[in-house]
Length: 114
Image (cartoon, rainbow, N blue to C red; front, side):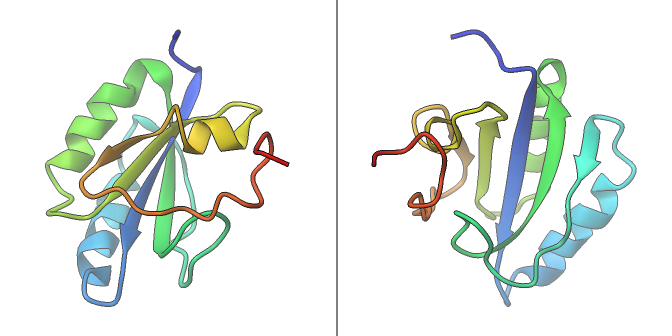
């Protein structure tokens, strides 16, 4: 499969790891590989099972950004998925993980089973 034009990288955290995640979030603000840095969510939102923040990057920069995140995540789970019209497919078959995969709430995603 061809690379997508853009990707989302979601860094998951909880009460014990919020400081680590905030450090990554702060450092991400200066990364030119990130085209959009999302909010630091105080509670789970959408399909995400825990608190998280999102970084958006171009497909050509994805592996560089993942290397940068992997060196800093210290065990945090990170979801990587393409930005495509079918959210269900993006969050399942086309998703990748750094660290332990999490169970996502897929029920509200477009393109999923009816």
